[in-house]
Image (cartoon, rainbow, N blue to C red; front, side, top):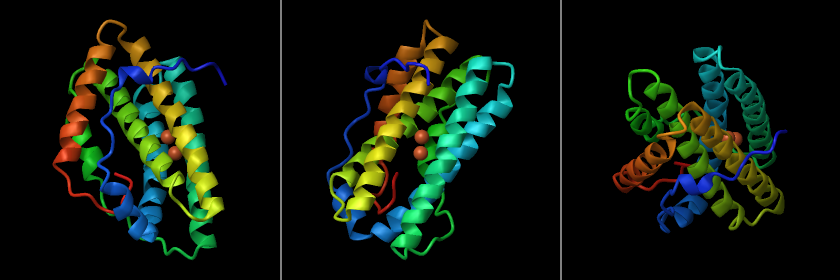
Length: 197
Ligand SMILES: [Fe+2]
Ligand SMILES: [Fe+2]
């Protein structure tokens, strides 16, 4: 894989509310069931971005690889669930991502920049929370899986940030900071539940 520059400083996400981790640990089955769908939606979103911008070679290459990573994560989470007898369930909905998507401007080229940056926010938030879980889980296999997934999601965040930088070198940093601040407001207005977001 090409070198991905460390761009995370451009996306200053607030720390997760400390009440989230104990709530998540108290209902790990629900967290795993939700997480399965997060990985599935990440794969689908990568492919949908590829479908929307098939003329951008870097984006096509990165999204093809990212969808592959995310489908592997779906496999890994589903294996964890069957090993631990966690029942899978329907997707509980997506109001966190929907609130972020509502911030995407309608016209190009702003639309592309915003879509990329919203994915960067979701990857960054997922990475943070998977790392929190990795630091707190009792089961060593689950811990290792969550640690490796957290590392992968940081890399994905940086892939999106590099695409954002290339899409709009002049404004991407300011827009990333705006969306990070907007995400903090979205989180502050949400109930804390045993889900990834
Ligand atoms: Fe993933
Ligand atoms: Fe990811």
